[in-house]
Length: 497
Image 1 (cartoon, helix red, strand yellow):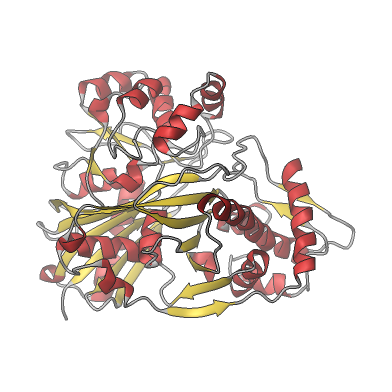
Image 2 (image 1 turned 90 degrees about the horizontal axis):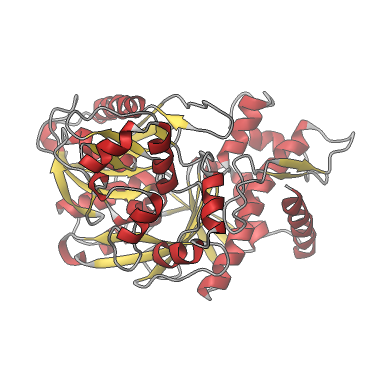
């Protein structure tokens, strides 16, 4: 049967486990959802124990389906929702409170105060990020403010902070490892893009004690081994970590500068490989670490990326389903939207959690324009898909300006990339070819690749690149004059949202 690598893909609404063979064949996968917590408007939290249980349940289902024996497991790779902030007791592993999710907007005022005080240029120069509630540092400070006893524990080193990857590694190793990788660390507002280390200046600015921070290791190396994990044997190496979007970039084999991907999940995330040097953005994008490799012939390699994030993509379809009751399942939206030739002039701006890059307007709200008596649920469904695609036009336009590279093709992945109409709309709006891979779960695939590299299952990323396969290609077919008019209406709507 051969060795397998387990990928744990811990996402915003659920956890997926993929079992990947040495020949890059998917043996099994399982997904388990967990509850979302909304204690106040604009606040989003998770129970870390619920996250852990969803991982255990998905592991059990996937391993059973793949009929994997204990000795077959060569390594584990982890990818995760990134900026979500978790704190736990370093000794017991118990969560100290609920996690604050990346979508949470409670620190918008704190970020605005820091901007008014003139801190953003320096923060941006060090981290490649903007001062926005999206990132971890202000979330951690909010935890200290809401639960004052946590700060003393953090200063004493008995409280551990991390993004979800750190929490999972701690649980998998029974507390033996408190680590993260640069792709996750670079999303905290505490990590230097060039130094590749925690910055004392930033820790002081955000009031974060260094004693609570994880050790930063390469994205592909052995961090520790499993101990006491239900359903897993002891001694399995945990050997790969990357934040979800960087893992997808890796899983899409975007290994050359200028190659780019867009992941359609809860949000939409467009990333471009920019090579061994960080590219500063003047168009509202983020500069981030893609990955660092520390296994085999890849030792010492650092790859950077430009990123544009739209906070709401697939979540807009969920809103039609759960908020409005307009559809009973997300898959219904494609047929409904195809039942009309266009949106009938309706424009939907999916700003339900504010607007991310390149606008960075946490105060923005979702908005619908152009409603008439002739508007139907089909028009609204199509406008929702168009809104997802139009957000990405703003991102691509900024990315091409920053990088000086004109994209001719874009790889796509994530659950919503299986919607053929959305992919065609995306190709038409962007004016570039859309390439969908045979395996659209490239986030989990990237985690598996990194875990396998870290444990020596595969020798190089070039071995992985040779195995990447395209499933379908979407080429632009829309009249460009019509697209130009559509973009004009979109820009007007965004300005009003």
